[in-house]
Length: 334
Image (cartoon, rainbow, N blue to C red; front, side, top):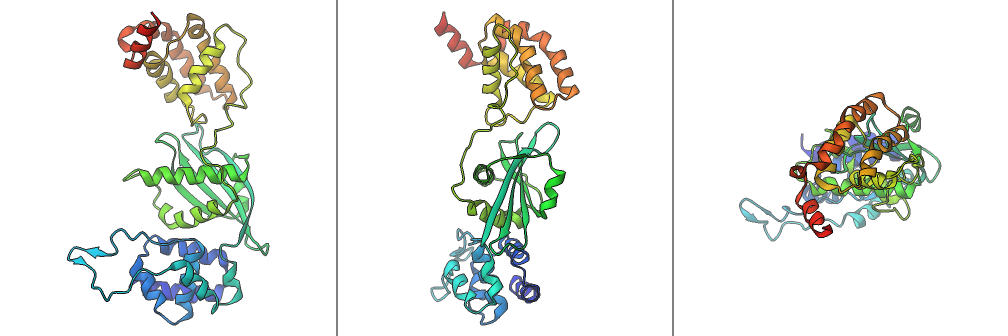
């Protein structure tokens, strides 16, 4: 069965269901395999199922990329071949022939945002937005998983019932900030060729992007508030300096704090990158314990600090571990 025939068959069922959300979810899956040939077939078919497909794809702004649509292994397309469909215009025209419920597709209101760790150590964080249609029907929750260990890319997304939020330990966050983080994460994913993502992500991607873009004034590249909320710095000489080094190491992903990351910080990053006073080196273990308490106080993280911190003075004194930038900075200070 061709993609077009399958789309017509599924759209026939959706016309009976009369559900904007169900139809948009279907269109998002269809968008993952749609191309201009499919759009041309749909636009040329004078039937309600094709019109519903066009309207749904337009509602989630699922225009396929046209990179290879004008040429194939044998050269350019025949000049008489139909051109690319203006999906937005085709979707508006299709709505004129469809039942009134179809016009509600994409007409959603965001009712809240949440953000926080998706696992014990924050190797993945979750960004969540709640929506319902403008008529108050079909509330739903979009959740995007953002990988912290590999650069902050979107690796998974689901659309669930609002009660799904009850099983997630996420903090209320302004929707415009959450939407911006979703868009940032998808942008990173798109920049990485061969990025490893969940098998189901392509089917939800178009709808997730559409929902994130529907939030007014999304804040792109917003700083994480985890650092600003930290107020437990120990009253020790050098603590401010030590915390400054930790902040530099954590960068844009402060929620990611695991035993392995503790080791990377104490035994690799600090000796290679940081120039610290003796007071800061002495204060570092207590600063890290305070930060660990701020992020859940997991015993295995505390144990790793206890195991690695005693080695820090010797590692910081070992000139062979210093990186080039650190060596240059030291020479300039002499």
